[in-house]
Length: 350
Image (cartoon, rainbow, N blue to C red; front, side):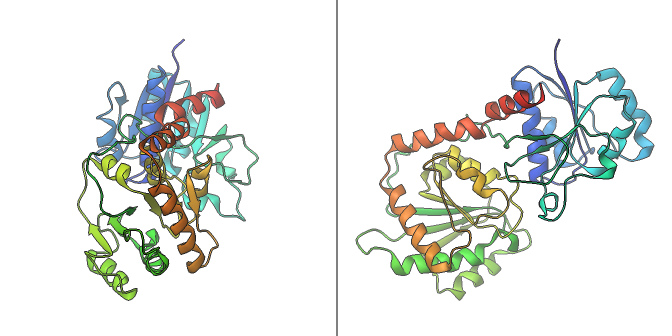
């Protein structure tokens, strides 16, 4: 009998939670599940789900109690094997469903506060929680732990015929205080001070669209550490279509976030492209360092120690061959591809 999933997402933004819900739909579709995807009409999850071939989309104007009749009608007609709920409104509506397997996703930073349990008296009808991390949490309900999956045919190690004159360190992420650009500028400035003179000086590429910071804010932070734009670092604020090529050419990918990062999309994409990562250690970032050669962390290090660790990692990466990068990419695929996501999910919910 064909398995069916109803994925319900009230998230209004093109956030990591939305990304996970879409990846879940794609991954389960790969292994033959029938997928029904319901999100808020006209919002990013709705628009993006419409583009997934083979996924049926039935959006809602809202997930309020006024939608209960339609909600129950869809459930009866689709008869899902599993219902995945990603937010509070749809979790509340799911209370009224006939008895079925309900899995609640928990992937936001507030879900992992150390002195709080994932349990909620309003989740009595939830069978288990779905977590995108292996970090410890307090919970009495069964936990399903599944990393976000990415398209391995897109994010892969690409060998370039272009010879770089300098090693690249790359930060990829929106321009926002939470992404920690300023803190990393200080580490990078210290790296340049200790960098061996017999090697070309590293170039820091900062790639991201303005969010709560603009280009002037980023440039001001770099100026504070006497980093010269165009000489020590460069800023790219436009969307890059072939981002996998740039990630593949990077020598170290940096995730410098100061918070969040429970769903580690960018870290996974660097690794899938064969690039080692250097992470701040917040959220679940260190989960991505689960195989040898994945990179390093500067959690709890001083700025001077972090600069030295980055120096060592960068020199190691510069000495790698294309075959070394391919091996890292293939290893990352075992953990972070859509296929790996589907396998991990079906192993745990069967």
